[in-house]
Length: 432
Image (tube, rainbow, N blue to C red; front, side, top):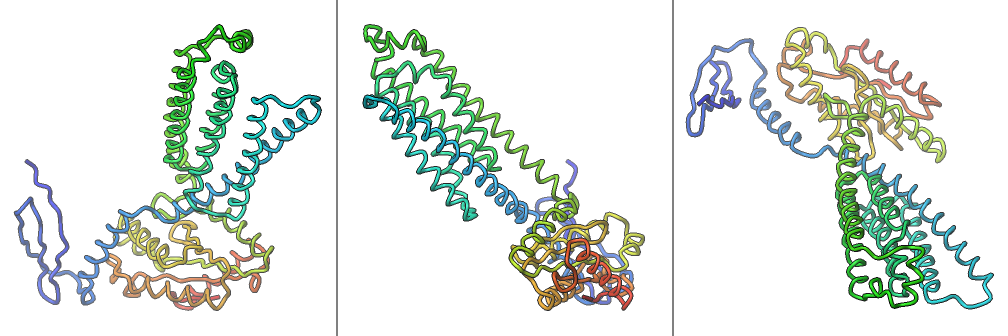
């Protein structure tokens, strides 16, 4: 059997030889000795071990910005859905109320039940619209939203069953499309669990409605004059047709779930840099314009940090592009975990990164930039001590709205000019 070799960087190095502990298999290890190369700073190897373990632990975590973005977009979609839901419920309720007001006689039990369901739907739609208008990002609200959508459709069908319009409920040409519409809208939450919940609830409730029809027996009682009248418009009750509709709901749920998973992957691929797993420039441009509009509307400050890895080309030429890619990944992790949850970090291009800081003034942005610069300079990048400055460092340019610029383009331009000044002043600096 070919041994599974895992090189554990237990580097016992001061000024003498370097010992590598190589694990060849379970319970088997080999110690090998090599002469040291160029002297490295003290404790650098131990720091590399800790850094590698930290990177491995971070890789096992879900990407926080990606999850937050999908939750934010899900909330925005919920706001749109809640608005259209409220408009549709108001329109249907208004039509029903108008028909009832022009009648000379009182509505029959079926019409009363339908009116009750309609106005209950209006109240529910209004409550959800208020909840999502406040930009609530509670995940459980999505379950409530899709659950009530499905339940209202089921309540409408049950109201017809209990008021004697059994065949109208069983062979309705509207019920199945409404269920499938609710299932399709559940996909806009970007949460496959919500879609599975919606499909399961729709299938379970429709199965319960079928069992209720069979238990009451009205659908099969052709001696009932009301059932006889409904036969002309809706046809006979066929249990096989009902079972087919149930299978269509289940199949629709399976397809919708896979569609949501694929949509999440595509949305992530469209906005996330594949190498560093932070946002890409396309998403940054979109977020910059949104945050600038918000800052102008509410008279708030917004800052941008534009940073570049010092002498990165020399590092790539000396150690290769794979080592350079690892530096960029570790740098992205430092930036991502060194910012607030409301901040945005994106790869601007090559070895350049941008940090977007909403509601942050110039002084606070300068302090944050200097702290990030120090964290990067103190981080134990592999072969970082071979850089001309003795470590992998970054230079940062800072721009702030409205003090430095009045629009997105001039804000980025100011940060870029500040970055050039930091480079010209000796690198590993922050300029504003």
